[in-house]
Length: 408
Image 1 (tube, rainbow, N blue to C red):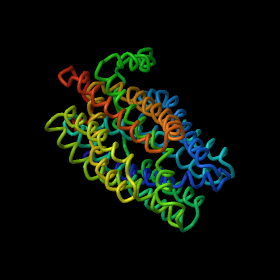
Image 2 (image 1 turned 90 degrees about the horizontal axis):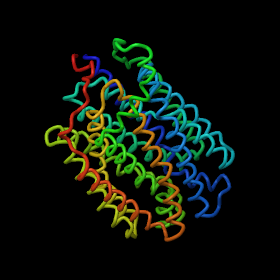
Image 3 (image 1 turned 60 degrees about the vertical axis):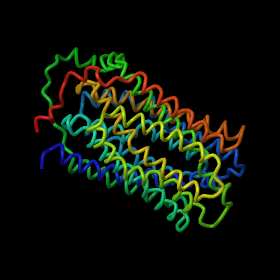
């Protein structure tokens, strides 16, 4: 099998298993915080916002550093590092005895993890340009499937075995990804054509690459996507509880609601990636962002979990097209030698969005009610659609380098 194809297959498996592990505890974190001593709903939303924002803020600071290191020392090594860190700190979250310990473990995990950026960077540098969007779509599908299965299994396991045990199970799954990456992923060796002083300036050159208009808008779009989705992170599980009350299978129901968007995204990601290769990434990106903006408005008006499940399933169909198209456009605007650093900056911007989103979501929900957070999300996606429509121009020159994998 051609090297890039084998890597793609293995990375899809790795991302699938890793996302199951990471998303397995999402449905019940708010409920787990209450078990650890938080009793008030508003306080639970605030702590959950810190849980998510702290992790993302640490990732925002660390991501450019890891991206620059990846350009110098290899993307495979960074993927192994990120996955191993995720395994260790997920285990420590299960061992936490207080809300503060849980949050500290989550924040440190953010500084050393970042598996999605590491995997996307590796795929973008190993895959031939003509297969780039569809390959990123396949990886995105694997991630979405993991995010579908994770909350379902995690919610069921939490109701059956207790919240803490789910963290240990998640850690074991992520460890499997570490072993698979070490054993099967191989990175193309590249000739060192630049002198040593020039290689030391790779981070500075990557910063200069952000002067490209397409790159700037696409990084803002990726950050806005993360920000808008994160607005709901401290609200959604509590919103579900407000709709149905404290029923015995609450975590399982929350898992279903949280997983349905990822499930429908997994169905659409590859299709939209292929469609983007034919019709153009920008057209698909704009359509998907605008669709998500519109579908969030009725989510603020639901009265049953069933209505919320349906609307989030439709939302997922649009979500499946955002990351593959935005990442493909970003890769084509960036030289191959700088993609690690630029994707690191993009991932940092996304982490920044994820760090600010929960704080705004908790504040808006506490001030005007939980439905208002859905309207904020819709507004952000609407602004993103305008930015991409007006300022991203696909006729601009692509990156000047072609990945070595294209010769495969």
